[in-house]
Image 1: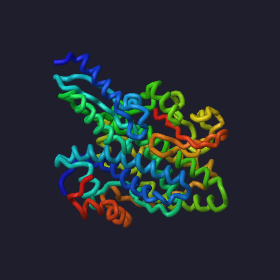
Image 2: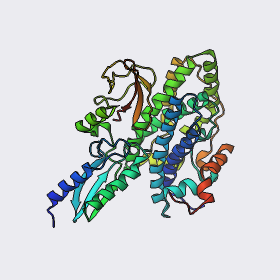
Image 3: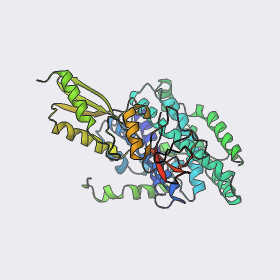
Image 4: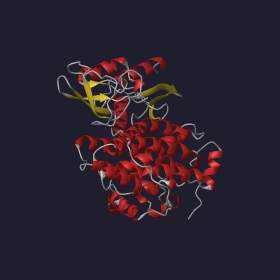
Length: 252
Length: 166
């Protein structure tokens, strides 16, 4: 495995988060509980996939091997993806999808708020642009958690189970490698551990309004940035990468 | 050799005639997609910016700009997509907003972020058809990334709202 630059790795992390989550949400297309939410979910997926293009395009340039966004999206295997494990989790039902989205969006918004001041111009520009869209995502997922939590008996039960099921995937969001720490000190990257308090406070605020019980801390599963993924990523990639792998000469 | 000033003016005219592929009543200039037009070492530089990150029209618009500049014989030119400054609905011209409304799409309400996504309490958006302000947001996300879905409680017609992105 060649030595990759620290910047390349974090840009891939950001791009892969958006790509995998975007793909996951897109699985709702045509299966939404009501048309308006089907459209809302696919809009969010589209925003994320658009953002991942910007990151992967930049990563391609950083790779030193003249890679394109498509090379990175469609030709890497599981071990080379660096997304958070949270983004790989199954859609299952609308409650799980909203819990996953809510935990991710709050983190994503906080991370982008820091990244918009990055000394790296490209990261800074992508962050400024993405933040406008992610602000809408965060509103959407937070409000659905509230509506479902403070809803019917069934929606409350499903939402409570969902926020508890997704909790073990959230610890990973606040980890930091020594490489990343250096990038933070250089003013290039956001400080993930420093986001934890603000994130937790915001989660609690929404869960309180949703009349849900905050999950208690437990074992946190991690490994995404080292390429140690859940069993789901293989299946996601098999579907997402099938066409370019089966028809390598295909063009639009 | 055409004077630089004239060349830039011409370019703006050409660009003003490039219709948005999704909303053909407005031009990409009305939408604030064209950010800069200047001449550098004799080459006409046109900078455009994508609206939403995932906007599927972005590539089409770039192709249309190249076609239009080719057809108007504006060589030598270069079209560049820039991410900064990030596109905002504040870039919409007043003319663009009027054209949107006439077409049946409620233009973005003045300069402030749309409030809650689901819980009502939206600022009052006027129905582009009957002009009533008794309207309701059905979803913050509509038929395209840039639009939200509204319903008029008066005339009962659904309509699109061009979302504030600031």
